[in-house]
Length: 85
Image (cartoon, rainbow, N blue to C red; front, side, top):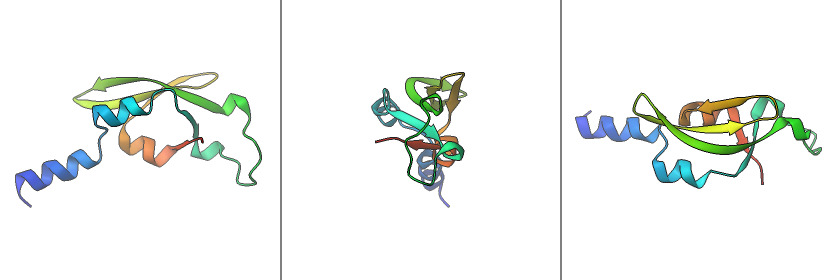
C-alpha cells in the first residue's frame, strides 16, 4: 500500500471535525443498553453529545450521560454507541 492509501485508510477510522461537530446535541445510547423489545428507553440511559475534543491528534466526541461523561474515538463510537432518532 502506498503512503497516501495508508493515510486514507487510517483517516476513515477517525472523525473529521465536520462530522464530529454535526453530532453535537444528538441523543445517543450505549448499544449494550438498547432494549431489543422496542420499548422506550429509560431516560437515565440516554445521553447527549455535548462536545468535541482532540486527544493525541485524534478527534473525539464527548457524551454526557445521567451519571457520567464519556469520550469516544470514531472506532469506539461506531462499536459502542447508537444514535437515537
